[in-house]
Image (cartoon, rainbow, N blue to C red):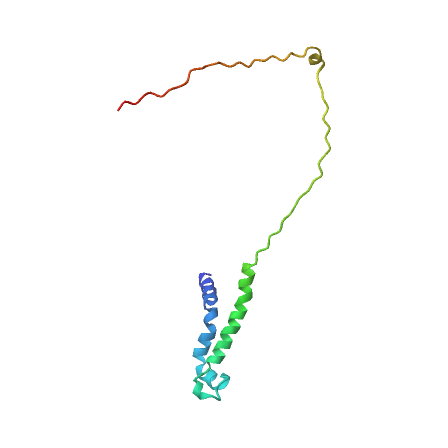
Amino acid sequence: MKKLITLIALLMLLKPVLPVVSYVVNYEYIAKELCVNKAKPQMHCNGKCHLMKELAKAAEQEKPLSEKKSVHTEVEVLFCQAVAHYSFACYLPAATKQNLPVYSNLYSKLNCSAVFHPPLIIS
């Protein structure tokens, strides 16, 4: 199982390099048969034009995968519920209706006129 995972990971890493490997292995065939500039030997193309086409094709195949990874969609779901109608009524027990206490002002303050003076520093 580990060998299979390693093989798959290796193939995924080498996928962009496969056109280059194919070019090196089939150099003679590509240079003689598939080269676009084989009629112009002074250009010394030797199948590099075919290699560039294959690399562009491999990059184009990789492009949609990377775009799918970068696409991020965010969905907002909003739940709503109707608010029940409430009515508030004033309810006072019969005992408190008879003897309501009178407001008593329990606030007091201390009048202090002394002002704090820091100690003198003698140098």
